[in-house]
Image (cartoon, rainbow, N blue to C red; front, side, top):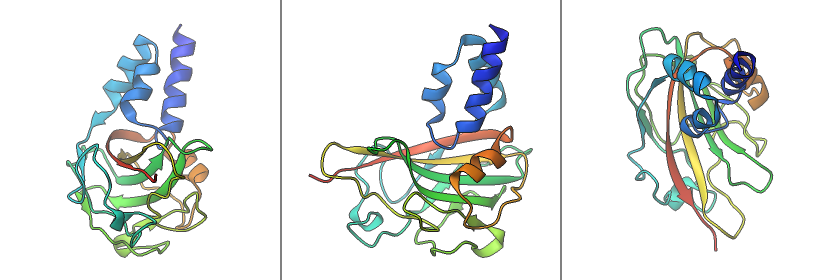
Length: 194
């Protein structure tokens, strides 16, 4: 059981960017859950642009201005050296679809303003990666017609600054984050096209 628990914790660390923290933790065996929870401090994540669980306004979608929403979060733990922000859609037809990758956000930051430029580098050494649309920066909800999709805006505190260049892929981000996540939280909004 100890070996499988270690494998589950490794899988958790490798895949934290693609999934909600709590559902993944709940899939782990008891000992692994306690070990992961002991290491990952919770962070509160919010957006002033839409309510938790509510419909994301068209302005932040492909049907509108397609601009990034503002995100705010609680202070990261003192051992954090940088922050990562992601937006993913686990309801996408081809599996988890990445809409946004932001990394090397200063550890003492508690917000990211809305309307970020679609640029590999932002002010203060902050970088953005390449999303699943093949673009650098944010691309908002653009689901096919059908059921409601859930968009997970996650903030992760890392015990290191990532040695990645702007424009990196989600695979590069996941590999660089492996073993370095010390805290995290998420905020979920929805979007639907009928």
